[in-house]
Image (cartoon, rainbow, N blue to C red; front, side, top):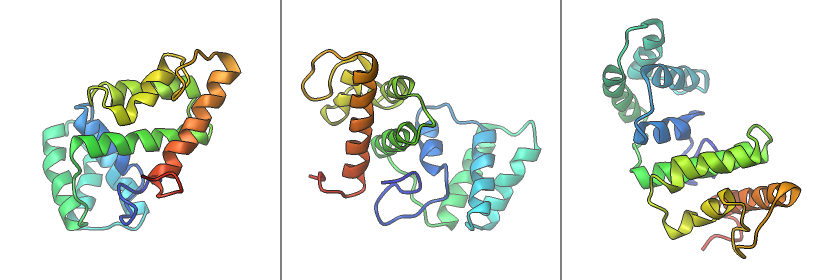
Length: 173
């Protein structure tokens, strides 16, 4: 699964996955929604509500409540379902794994973000616990202590595993 997919068959405007996660974490703002709409237009996803939402960027007083109504309409117009919290946050973990793998996010800081934004809000389910172990500087499967370059390598390996599994790669169960 890459940043533009919640499922392997659904292509989405860029930054949809982070927006969904922010929405479920109650940290989204009208500006986040407006930026998503601008990205959507640039990516060729056009509808009346997407245009209206992009225009909220020009209104410094736009509220998240106003943005939510227009965002939901935009998603309906684009036939994009708004995912449940667990789905959105797990997709965000894969998105962040991609950011770490690409070098846009420091491995240790990225693991901390996955723990804070995915593992903890989902109450530490078993399938995302390897992120928690990495945040505690433990190998994600052997639970042995790691540090320095060894920790960074384990994080990058786990990110690759996470992305391959989400992409329907050979490790998908």
